[in-house]
Image (cartoon, rainbow, N blue to C red; front, side, top):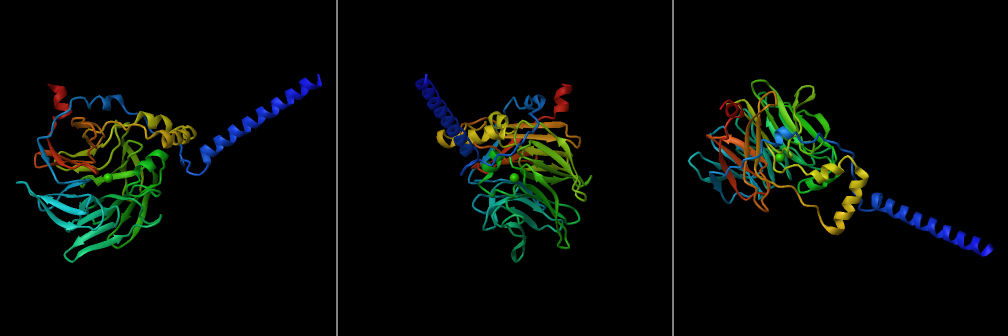
Length: 367
Ligand SMILES: [Ca+2]
């Protein structure tokens, strides 16, 4: 009997040791060195009615080469179309065609905007918020460690000269956006710079605030949260946010106000990832998934066709731009109407493309 008791005790001790070992391993995987700092994040699922709009792809009518990384396109006060490239060049295109280098930021230009006095301003991921004058570039706000600018992304300039800027993350800079996405971190800020030199945080704790634009007639400022797949209307005085459109089928990047039609064009460089969004509200599981991906490779990313959605002031869809899905191609981060066509470029696309203006959804419905 004593021999049996002894064997039983030894067995229990081994079981407890194994359980402790497994528990220790789980703690190490979840919280040990290199663990993903996953945050709880639970964005609204894509709206099926919005997803259904992206069904019939159209081909571009123009594809212009040699323009790698045209992250943002911006019509200038001189009638030309402007963009910044991955190598730092600022390019301009006249309506009759042909791109010309007009400046070089020495960094990585992302969002472009012109102030009421006609000066080009750039949200440069490496140089911060900069302005081009006759004498060259002036740095308005430098990048650095948070609370300095970390991921200077996009800007719009109001009629009174106030610059509204997005800093997409307080934790990750340019080239690290997938880390921000994995974590589901929400440290983006909207900053306002008034002409008297005051810098103010208008809104913070956002899930990768990226595109910003404004409607000069209503004074509304629009900003988006890329990971939350939503666009907000921002009060530029109080910083108050209200949702303009939610449940987008992809991750919004740059947005552009079209004053001729009073529409906000939203570029979505990627469809939403069902896998990642399953894990976002389950941070412990996501930490384990990150370990799994470290060993077995990254999960496949969703398709990245050109996707643009134009909505009115009520957030109702009015026009949809949907390009072909091509193997290995990355999506469009900017979708802008210019000279009777819709122009697109992308953070990591080699070309700038022009598409025919898609029909209005309200007209299609009446047919
Ligand atoms: Ca952007």
